[in-house]
Amino acid sequence: MPIMQQASFHTPSLASARANRHRNETLHWSYGSLHRLQSCRRAPKTRVACLVKAESTAATEWHKESLKHVLEAQQFSQAALTKIFQCASDMENIKRHTPAAKQLEGYIMSTLFYEPSTRTRLSFESAMSRLGGTVLSTESAGEYSSAAKGETLEDTIRTIEGYADCIVLRHNLAGSAKKAAAAASVPIINAGDGPGQHPTQALLDVYTIQREVGHLDKLRIGLVGDLANGRTVRSLAYLLSMYDDVKMYFVAPDVVRMKDDIKEFLIGRGVDWQEAESLQEVAADVDVLYQTRIQKERFQDRPEDYEKARGKYVINADIMKILPKSSVVMHPLPRVDEIDVEVDSDPRAAYFRQARNGLFIRMALLKLALTG
Image (cartoon, rainbow, N blue to C red):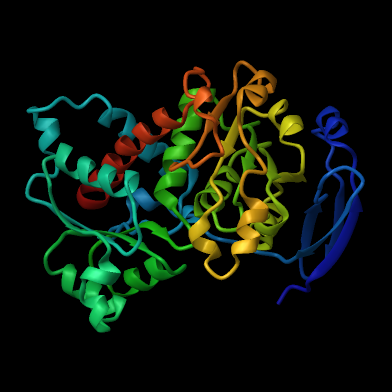
């Protein structure tokens, strides 16, 4: 087992970091092999301690696998992403009542949702319908399925796979998608597992960034809001770590900072990241400002922490004046009050285009998972 190391760094201001963005402080030590620790930066004149361990997650050629589960962002290789994005681009051009619109005719998809959803569930159901397939849908499965009678998730999956060719699962507990896949003989697609991951959202996010910004290497992105509970930002961080010279800024209230497991993963991949307190400074330096809502449902037993976090970072007209003209604002939606509605008319507001891209990514995933 690798030895856990602890290191602390005094870090420069964000303005100084921008001027020296290609200079990374490194620390080397040996334990069987050499590991690299980048400087873990935070707000000006602060010190931060990082527990670092060697960690590796093997990406796979997902598009070549016989049983194509979609469980977590880090399972995809760059080659798999290229294949998915090429397929999604093709899906944008499909016309109704054409042979291409019947690619999944005869296939059945089940959506099994234990948590509320609008965009994810409806976009998956629309994706299946637009390719000629059939949908079996269950919303509020925890209340209206046999789970309310005590049935295990595994038994539910083994039952539903007898009716459907793939299962799109949203669950309130992290790790549920992996548990379902272990019991399944049909593709399981993770549509969000509590505070764990949301890989299909990350795929559509990266697809959107590529289309809107034009590049993924050398990307500067600010992740803002509820980074502790936001499964979308976790999955997005995993995917973007595959690209060269990516810089991530984490802007969050103290009670919902990005968790250490993501920071450690990024350090292990040599990805530069910085925790910052000033949304204004970050907005001036990024290609993408990725906002998220403070998730009230994750604060059931901590209402005082929710009040501390909500409303601290809001994207409004003042922030848009600072944001570069070539940059974009993204949000996985739904929003509450963290993006002012006056921003919607700005051409850099990409979040509704982002939601639309989810349809094409999910069409591509269903096509590839069911037909290869």
